[in-house]
Structures are given as C-alpha cells and as structure tokens.
Amino acid sequence: MKERIIMIGANGQIGSELATALRSRFGAENVITSDIREPHALKEDEIFEIINVLDKSALKSLFEKYKPTQVYLLAAMLSATGEKYPQKAWDLNINGLLHVLDLALELGIKKIFWPSSIAVFGPHSPKQYTDQYCVMDPVSIYGVSKLAGERLCEYYHHKYDLDIRSIRYPGIISWKTAPGGGTTDYAIDIFIEALKHGQYACFLSANTALPMLYMEDAVRGTIELMDTPSEQISIRSSYNLAGLSFTPAEIAEEIKKILPNFEMSYVDYDPRQAIADSWPASIDDSFARKDWSWEPKFDLASITEDMIANLKTNV
Ligand code: AKB
Image 1 (cartoon, rainbow, N blue to C red):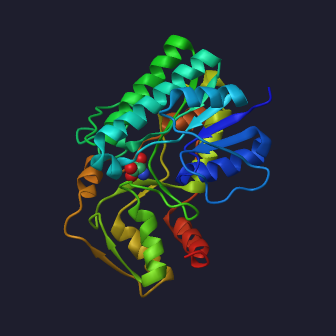
Image 2 (tube, helix red, strand yellow; image 1 turned 90 degrees about the vertical axis):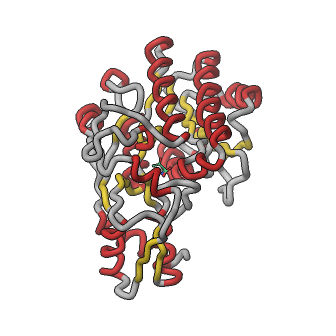
C-alpha cells in the first residue's frame, strides 16, 4: 500500500529530522508536515500546513484533504516548560492526542506514532535499568500527561484495534534543531556554549545520570518500530528505549578531550534538578531489542565527536 504521512509538530527537534528521513523514504509528495508556525526553511517540493492540534475541526479538514495512512503526532509541551504552564501542558499533551485518536477512528487512519518519555517514571521506579513494567509515579505534569497518554494508546489499540506505536524517548541529542523546554536540554546546550564561549554553567548537578540517545539513533529506531509487522509489537503503551547514560561531569570530560580549555561549572539551584532526580539513570530496553531488534549505535565518544564537528561550522 502507498503510504501518505501527516506529521504534527514537525518543526520541533525530533520532527524536523524525522521528516527529512521520512521524505527520503516515502517521497516528499507523501509526507505532509504541519505545525502551529511556519518552518524556518521549506524546499520547493515539501508540503507544509499550519495546524493547531487543539483545533479538532481544522485537524479533521487537514486529514480529509490529504487522507493520510499514517499520522506522527509530535506536538507536545516538554518537562521544564510544562511546570510553568501545567494546564496548557495537560491540554496540549492529552487533548491533542485524543483528537488524533478519535479522528483516526472516524476517518479510518490505521497507523499512529506518538512519543512518550522517560518522564513517565518517578521517584519509586527503579533508578538503574528501569524496567518496562514497574512502579510509575511521575512527578512532573509532562510525565503525568505522558503516562495518561500511554494508557489511552493501549486502550484505543485494544478496544478499537488502532495500530498505535510509541517510544519512551530519553533525552535526544542533536545539532540541527534545538530542543525546547526539556530537562535533558543541557546535553545540547553544553556543546553550543563550549564552542561559543569555552565554558558552560550546567543546570544539573555533576553526578546526575540520565538516559540519552543520539538523534540518528532516535530517527532510525522510530522508523524501525513503524516498519515492524504489527503482530511483533507486544507493547501498545510505549517501548522503553535506551541509547546511553551519562552525567554532566562525564560529558564535560569527553568534551575536554577535544576542547582541552573547556570549563564546566554548576549552578546552585535550578528547578529542573528535581525533575531529573525523579527520572531513571538508565533504562532496560529488552522488549525493543526482542520485538524489533533495536540496537543503538552511538556512544558518548562518537556523539561528542559528531556534535563538535557539526556545530563547529554552525554556531
Ligand atoms: C525532557 O527533558 O523533557 C525531554 C524528555 C526526556 O522527554 N527531553
């Protein structure tokens, strides 16, 4: 079957790179990107539409116009911004998802991708190699909305047979598009500041280990999951997915191997520390490995090299 994809929230960190990969796979004419704002750049053959996922009737018109076979819903408010605007975060993260799920049923759209996050875990979840199934008591509104969203996804799959797939993304590291309002953003800021100013004041403490993933792995993993035959998908809430885990002190050391004069300091207080402290330090992703042969390629050394090489000419 010929696929036609609509991506919502396509201007963000993941969307902008995932859209490029999907366009080269399915053809630019079959990937329609959308967001609440115009993108910075658009090539001649790329199709883009302004959409607010909270406007259900506009969303319905968009789906009726393009008749997608797949929808990628990436519009979301992340952990740090969510704490500033909890009601808006809940509204966007949950009602946006419900609009897509309900319209998918109404219009017969079969396949949906929706991202969850390691934010679904909380202080009583195991800290190391956090299991797919364990105590989940998220403390941020972002985590609460992602956990509720996961339950909705599984519910719509079981009740209505919607083919919905999801990944609990860790912090995603990339150089092309900046993330917005996350707790893991330091792992990108650090490279930009190291190259621009030779120093970085980190908002997380030196020994805060968090799960992370390089963008190239994240894009490949997402497409691999979407390619997997439906009967192999054993998890319809959201898959744990691991790349690597490191602390601010460890990434600073790695950067110093390439930029020996780089200096790292740590701020005394930042509200993002409490969010990070409630999240896992590392993730057990054995279901993804078993169900769709997931395997990350990038480690801390290769990420650091690639980030610095690419940002050097861009900052
Ligand atoms: C955030 O920090 O909020 C996100 C995430 C881990 O989902 N990057």
